[in-house]
Length: 378
Image (cartoon, rainbow, N blue to C red; front, side, top):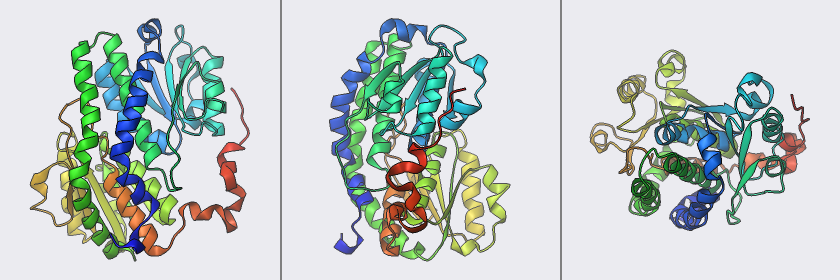
């Protein structure tokens, strides 16, 4: 890789395999102990919450939580949980719902506000954070303490991945304790999570080269669409966020049905970078495939990220990534191609992540735009 295309997002992507193995060794025993057996047995409902990447990570694991725990699971933004969530659904039974709140920094005012409200009305909060002394850590009933190594600053890659990893290990533990499957099968699930760290390595260089080529073709386009359904939609959401943070360009996430009701009608189709995320086992596969056809008819610059190798011969810009070998566990690195792509476009354009929090943005320096918001506990 030529040095002038290097960037911190790419560096973090290339460190994901080792990071995953190291974090697994730290988090796997912690997720066995962070909730007691009586606490796990008492759960009647789970709410996953967070802001930004943490919210996307929650969306990504929702289906897994439902499959493994056989409990009702909601993903609720921190704002909605803090200000709009029906109070009758908080404390409807002792220590319920279980609210799992994710924030590596733990300092966001809205997450802190949400968990204080949940505790006030009788819910149980499990905070997942790298800062147990933060507003999230101090207002949680229990804390899963993250320890992510310091990395070069970049729109979140490693932190997003560790959030997903910790949530999947928690889901595995909750289902195991509740007797939804045997201890042996719980270890099959854990082994799949760990083995995916190795499956990334053989794929990485090939995808990296293809992505750089696409970035060079797309560098002058100023708008992006990310289209998916089901768990894949979380990767679309995450990718949309990275475009905004890394490049400052217009970006949107949308599901593969609504794409045909809304984004379908946009003008200047040749300048809208259009990315489809598609798992071959996704229930919405057929509709996403139809949307891919329409994107090509509209002559949009189109990229497909998929574990379905049969699409590679049909569509030019298709990146085939590994698939999960276990039904309940998604492929946890599904986001890595878009992280590489967006990092390259950022570098080619000479953009600074988050606009460097300078000029018009300097009022938000040190995270003040989200840390210093007024907290109101309803």
